[in-house]
Length: 64
Image 1 (cartoon, rainbow, N blue to C red):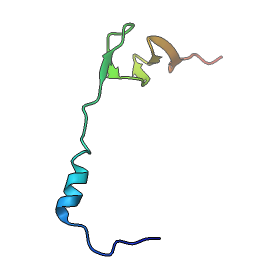
Image 2: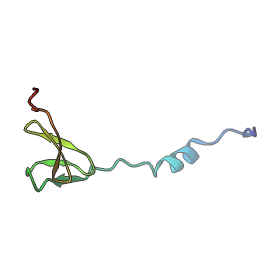
Image 3: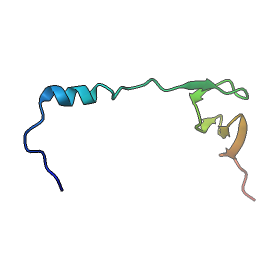
Image 4: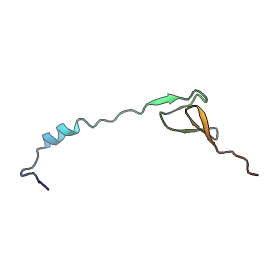
């Protein structure tokens, strides 16, 4: 493995790190429930798991 002969300067490291930026998460409003949630993620509302406006799972399923 090649190794650098000399140490990189702090300025060089800082220039590389300027491109790492934090972005605000994109939020959406569900058409079925009206709740705000992260995009492309399922979310719970009133005991039901919603994804793309459809019920995917129900927490309150009755057992026989």
